[in-house]
Length: 152
Image (cartoon, rainbow, N blue to C red; front, side, top):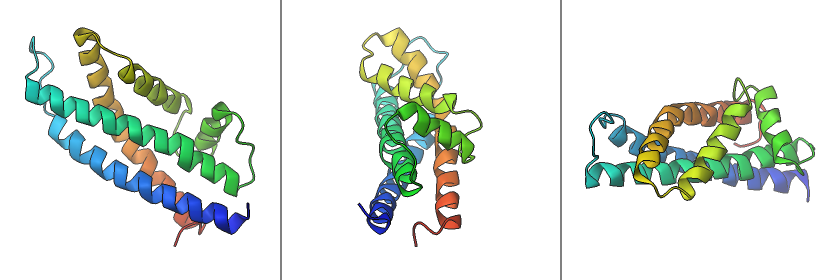
């Protein structure tokens, strides 16, 4: 595939990431004031947190599997190992430590397979803590993309 085609696909995926990040932020704003100290969350609060978690997971997937991988393809890096893809995200300045991305991906995977209410509450708190970091990563990728003239 030619570089111009790779850039086009990357820009489409970046736009998809941006749209998902906007929806994630809307969910975050609804969820950030939920009181986790009370014994039981209401059905409405659980629904808000479920939506937030789903959007968080989708945003992480698009970030790692499409956008970061797409950057590596444009910049002629080896994309065969996901670990290398996230390590290069640190080198590009998107995260201070690549392990943050691994934690986000692990959290996303745990949420998909979590059924116990108590553990779920802790996972929801983690999503709330990591969402602003994820939004900041998206912002930095957009800045990088503009600086490198990948997307117009």
